[in-house]
Image (cartoon, rainbow, N blue to C red; front, side, top):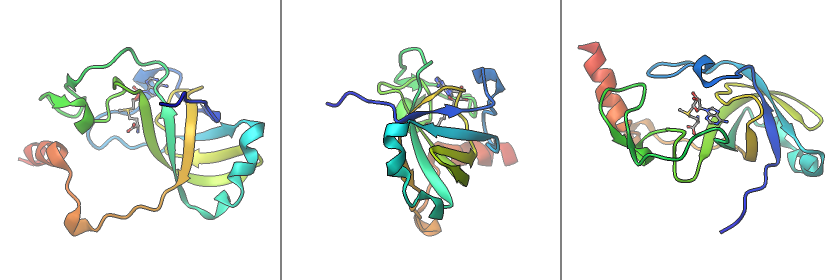
Amino acid sequence: MFTSRPIGSVSSPYKQTSEIPKGLGAKHEAEGVLKILPEFEAGLTDIEGFSHLIVLWEFDRSDGFALVGTPPSDNRPHGVFATRSPRRPNPIGLTVVELLRREGASLHVRGVDMLDGTPILDIKPYLSSVPSDKFRRGWLAEVEARQKQ
Ligand SMILES: C[S@@+](CC[C@H](N)C(=O)[O-])C[C@H]1O[C@@H](n2cnc3c(N)ncnc32)[C@H](O)[C@@H]1O
């Protein structure tokens, strides 16, 4: 196993978890800045060409983990690996953000759902595209269908 080493931190408008939109249909449009440490800045070379980035980060303020829990979007329990719960065995978060602009080692982005000061573990360009006929939303699709009834 490796020991994680943050490459920077998130500057976010959210100081408390209660301020972050949650649940079904929650929209993440808040702007923030991914502040990359000077020693990793060269790793941002050519990143400007990508519209969206995957940010891997640490839930540094979560408390332990629960293998089964009830997420805000449902009243039924689900396994942690079928949810985006912050309380996971390895507290790693993943957020897709829109890259607005780069200023040196700072990436201005839209779509943050992390607390201010959250450590960033990695950044990758967002490339994935799953064909719509192969894409399934699991229990979330059931919740959405129940709500429409
Ligand atoms: C449901 S998780 C989803 C995060 C990410 N998009 C993912 O899928 O891994 C988002 C929640 O994590 C919590 N959170 C955000 N930043 C955190 C941090 N640094 N430490 C602990 N919890 C955090 C907030 O309660 C926020 O609403």
